[in-house]
Every structure is written in C-alpha cells, then in structure tokens.
Length: 329
Image 1 (cartoon, rainbow, N blue to C red):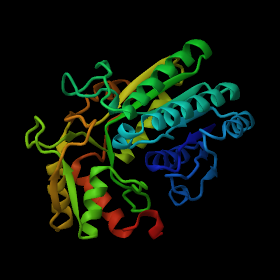
Image 2: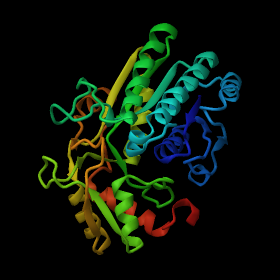
Image 3: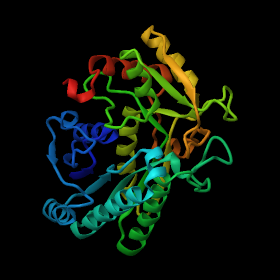
C-alpha cells in the first residue's frame, strides 16, 4: 500500500511519515522544503514539488504512483501573519489543497486525511469543545481550514473521495529518541519559543495577560506530536470499509495557560525563563481545549505521551541537542 504525504517534511508530517513507514506503508513525501526539512525524513523518498505552483508535476506524480491514500499537511500556519496577508493564506492553503484534491481525484486515490486545526472553532461557546461546535474562526488561517473541510465534503459527494479532517489542538514535543523535533522558519509556537529563549538567554514576550482565564493568559490543550502521528494512522484505518466525510478533535481535554507552560519549562530545565507581557495578538482565542471523546470512541485513539511534563522534557532534550534546529545536524 502506497501513501502520499503532502507536506511530509514538516513537523507533524515528518512524524506521521515515519509512523506510516513503521506500519508497513510505502511512503512518498511531497514537499517544497520551504518550511520542511529533508533531515527530518532521512531514509524516506522525497519528491520536491510546490503544490501551489507545480500543479501539473503534482498530477503526473499521482497518475504515475496510484496512491492508495493521501495525507495533506502542506499549509501556511502563522495565525498572526494571516491577519496581515489573508490573500496569501487563502491562495496557498485553499488553492494548494484543491490542487492536491484534483491530483488525488485524477490519480484514483479514495482516502484523504486532512491536517485541520482547532482554530476552526474560534472563541468557544462551551468548553471542552466538541466537533459539532459552530465554526467561527478568529483569523484567516482558521477560515482557510474551514473552507478546505467544506471542499472535502463536496469532493465526497461528487467524486466519492472519503476523508477525515483531524482538528489539532496544540501540537508540541519531540521524538523520545531525540532524533526529530519542531523547527519552523518563523517560530510562533509558545513552547519552542520559550525553550529557545532559555538556551539563548533571551527574553520572550507573552501576548496578553488580561484574558478571562485563571491567570489572564491564553489556555491551550497541548498534545504530543507522537500521539498526533498515531491519530493519523487511526484515521486511515477508520476509512477502511467506510465512506463519507468525518472530523475528529485531537487533544487531551486538559488546558494549560502560557504561564503554566513557562513554569514547566523552568521545572524541566532548571533555568529561569525571562519574559515580559505584551499586548494581545490579534486573532488569538482565549481558551481552546478539546473534547476528545469522539476520537477516543470512534478511532480508538488515546494520547500516551501528552502530559505536559513529558511533552516539555522531550522538546527540551531536542532543542538542547539542536539549538539551531535541523541546521545543527
């Protein structure tokens, strides 16, 4: 069985690519390496293709390889950037996804796993957040994911391509063997920002302390990237013998504030985090915590590594070993 992993050299994509290989799949990674890293997928086949600009090359690859399943991770992911340049995000995230879907359609792939986000929900009306919660994104990044999810529903109705959208809450952590971790060219994620600030003896900014949360800072549901990789395998298995368009939350049901994450980094590292409080980031939701019941019951997925201490310990070990990310390798 052969799988296309689009954006497979990125953070979650690389972990899922390795998990697929370990599960016996023939994996072909499609990535333009604009934010992914070939070092993260050493030993796996990599085709360098820009899914936005190289539509024909993508279609030819799909027609040639006849993939059994498609995993689509490729996207721009900076919430704050999307507020400044929404057209870029709609062009890339929606246009690129349509190119991948068209390649899947013409190449005969009938199972499609989509990398979505908790950002589709916006500011929650209830906590924890179930899958049926209204979709009211607070930024164009989240809106782009909603639009792709809606597109997937139409591709099933018209072309019979079944899909699972996995709505990540906050992915974090690194491999337990220290080989693979999180390295974005424009790092906006809290945990790597905190850890890098400690390693570089720099101060970081915490965006806002006037939210209606227990300590005034944003609360997020952190899930280990290893558990997310497992969720993708479970989603693929779910589509065996099933047809339709499905969506699942992947989170723990437990939220941690920005200041609580800082305290855990201090506990694990034994070092003091230097931080200051800045203004809120436009488009940030105050509190995003998953209700993972549906994924647990229907996918049989349960996070194994997603307690905050394990996440921080694995991330700290990787960043300490690779202070400049994959360029340290």
